[in-house]
Length: 289
Image (cartoon, rainbow, N blue to C red; front, top):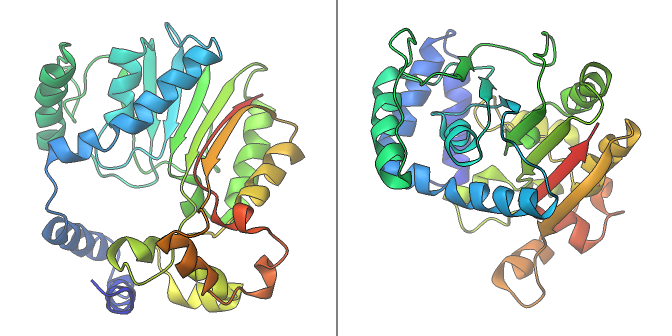
């Protein structure tokens, strides 16, 4: 769908009463997203593989550790990888929305069991069909509410979709409430979401707008704070996190995506950054409290 039409659609949805707008959004997502549950699970595998490799290199063992994931998404993909492949003792997954459905989770249980050679047995007392030691906390704002006692905090492509003040407040809070030595792991994708359905756009197209202009364009359905890599690093360093691992990808000169990026008339707010900093994507960072 053309990004302009998509913006109009999302803005129209935002005018509907609460719950009605979310219902319609889910229906539209289902209509346009033709991927199967297996397709969606496969799309998470690179995250697990990349994470597993780096944890091994850093000699970080998650066996018998409690993992706190925020940004659960549509189904418990990473919690299952943490429990069944990385040996975590317990996984607590929190989300500001409620997307899990028992029917989907039960299908995932069978699919994950067959695909990865393990036995995912649903807890009969769990309303979502989740197994023992995987717990779901929907409708929970982690910035405003209490944190559990955990060993690892994890997010997968969530930070870019939080209000930038909340990103700062969250890391300030974690530094205060988490015990020393806790690992905080983030996968970050700071690219323009509108490009996913409109290849005519640069991954960095939204950098041409002022903050005021951008606030008028995006909605709660495609919210993106536009923070660049140096800005994320500034927040981490501000609260004295140890950066134990960092890797990312930047656009290479001569590629189509780089050529699209160079056509973007950057807003003054972003001209102080290098091309590498502006196009840094697929960011993976491991912090230590």
